[in-house]
Length: 252
Image (tube, rainbow, N blue to C red; front, top):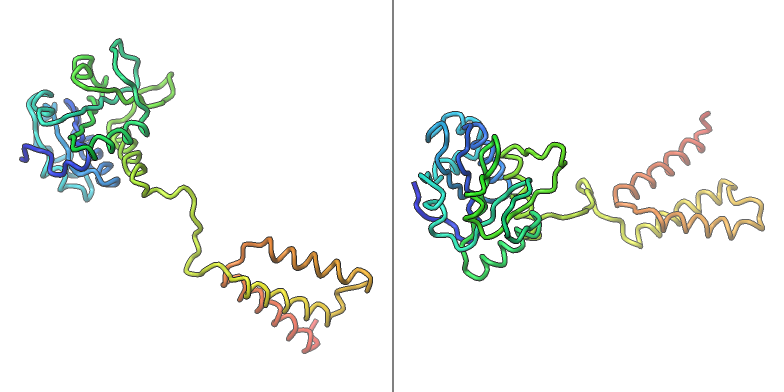
């Protein structure tokens, strides 16, 4: 197994005394979801390698194959310059406390300066012990329900991984799902508005005459407020053409 961070441009994920192989595998899967690919495993309870971890990794088995097995925490951190310890509980230790978002921003800044960064995750039953946290430079405090503060190991890894990827600007807050089409151009909307106006005028819609101008203005204003795609415009043209054909055939 590797003895150093394969890619120092990303944080190492250090699982401290994990208890269940399934949780290690799920953590690997969560890591790979968000582009983290270096795991260090400190004194796993059920030994290593663990078939249950491989089964749970579901496509992220490479992370387990390349994971660094460490006998204790000092060995896992010997090449790291800055270490975060994750915890949801108050600790009687004087350290800077980061939110997950701020922690991953800090991690990116330190990595950009050439530092190697690691994030510690504790065992499932009770999390990191104070002796573990004492070896870290800062705490990552996950905001959780104080009445139920326990996070599953893989859930905590996923949360940190998400903030890591979000810090790269790869998470888009809002985007339009256009389903293979594009937004209609102003010219296309204008042509649609003219089509409807002409057909509705021929049908005698603009009545009485003294309201014709305001009715046309309101109709144009409606088209301008609607976020239409090219597919929408084509469908609306088709609807109007079909209604005109139906009327011309004299169908009821």
